[in-house]
Image (cartoon, rainbow, N blue to C red):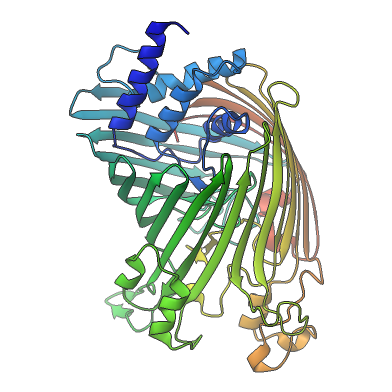
Length: 546
């Protein structure tokens, strides 16, 4: 690298760190997130991948840093240049640079704005019927001055046959469907405003968040629910420490009869209040090792409590101040830890532990334990063969995780679990291989095996305990000692082969083949009827924007 390029590189680094505006980049662009992961696994950049979404400013900084690394392959260099056509917007003022195509783009010393359309469609064939999902809308992001970031989007969706729903075991994003027939519509609007500075930011959002490591949905917060409103605070005052906090307004979908009332032609139904406060501390005791830990609380049936706006609290203890240790008065707290290691070049090892409830005194007591925990362990190796990545991951979720006997404080929003899509009393084996022969082309083969046992919460809600001798009939101990998957009621083996190509920034064409094998007496409960009707699903489509 000659002297001129060195000066330019350090000038750009200085410039980007002087810009503090930021807008989150949505987690649905898996191709970009996978490229960031690839650079991180190779040791080219250092990323705390347990906290998503990343901001555009962060991504721009990482791409700029990676550009100078001599170990990049030809394909990675082309990929890097391709993405910088978009993220150069965070690095420059004006229009005279190698930039992606936008519907509208404005950039001056005060105001920056990008506007693009959103358009997409996907066709499915299960050997019997062809159905489709189409969507359209628009998105924007920008900044005002040195500290204020703005972003927003709207997309309207139509499914000729509904493909998702909170009751199904599916990776499809959550949706609030409208309509009484099999064809349904739904819309999704996201956006926010942020105020940021050199080492931190505050934000008000309606969006998705993802906390925890994993390539097949995190067990902590997967971003699977419909987007919800939240306040965010994050800071990185030193290189070895990050802190993230949210306070969110969730959707309980539980009718509050005390606030519901009759109107002229029916009843006005009002949902019970439901909130979340959550924090995550990340420390780096040595390079490329991130240890994250935090806690959260779901509180409902009450007004907003400013106590839970304090970012650094242990929320279970704070809740005891208000409920005097009474479970029927109090709320639902969780703890979690995530460890992510990339200390061996090209190898990412990780594990996550989500604790919904646990009794240390009864930890090993089979009859009285309340080990309501979810656990994920896995690894990904990159470039053992050039341009490939191989992933192996196992997830185990014990009974009653994400559940609660008070429905307004379960770990859900719009009835979707905020953690893993496989729900409680279940496990998953996930294997995948990804090959990137040229810039923009991804070929992904994956195998997923999911098992699920009884839905104990449904058994309790329906008063069917007498039919299940493994449940302790003592009322005080009714939720203790529940065995993990003593009966497998649902199985799904899924093989998937997907090929996609990114033509221009954010514009993809793709084709996918899936083979599913279902078994168990609850397969109709957990598998969408369209996918259950045919073991082989072929789909193809295109999209522009996220």
